[in-house]
Length: 258
Image 1 (cartoon, rainbow, N blue to C red):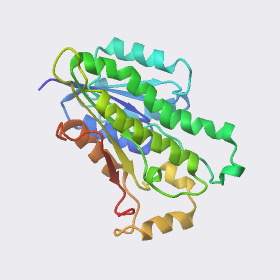
Image 2: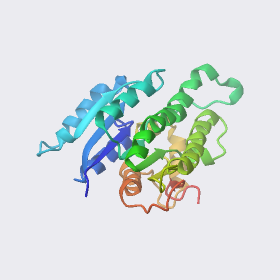
Image 3: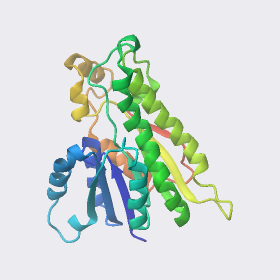
Image 4: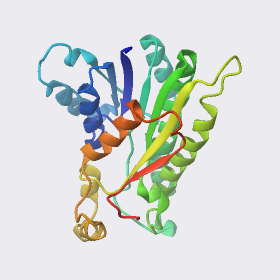
């Protein structure tokens, strides 16, 4: 089996780290590129240093730090991918949430713009930069991370919800575009998204204790999700899911919206 190269954004976060660990455990991934914001450079370095110094493991990990909202981010990404020659798997985990919830009439839209810039446009930039290389190689797996917020009525959280709804629409549309090949059979490229429920990460710590308890009580297992559970679904989509599974949003919320 040919060795693969994967690119993971938001790699310093809870879900991102779990995804990277899962990829490292699979020897078929020769290179794993980690991307996160410059403010998380130290966390990213510490994360890489935490891996056991067994042969090849540290060498398989390379970290890059830049701001996805930067106007030049798309060009930097293209240069990065071009230097690597190929990206087989793109996993867009990077995302941010508001520190507090407020109705639209009390929302500072200029301040909230960053949520859309990171969650939606950041994902779009990565897909745009990587897809041509996947099409040139005839193979690719793209997995975007959405949220159950995209499917919920959440007064006070509409900007975040809208950003994730955009990710889901992007995923479905790109699943149709990506395989197109005017010169031959369709490319073996699938595009899917995972929509986590409330996961036990730093982002969940922004929620009030009352809200967290409410989420727990609304699931049959009475707990928050684990980052490793999301990573396992993402890994399956990246490696074992059938080609005919594309354009799907897989909800992993412990039955919260069942």
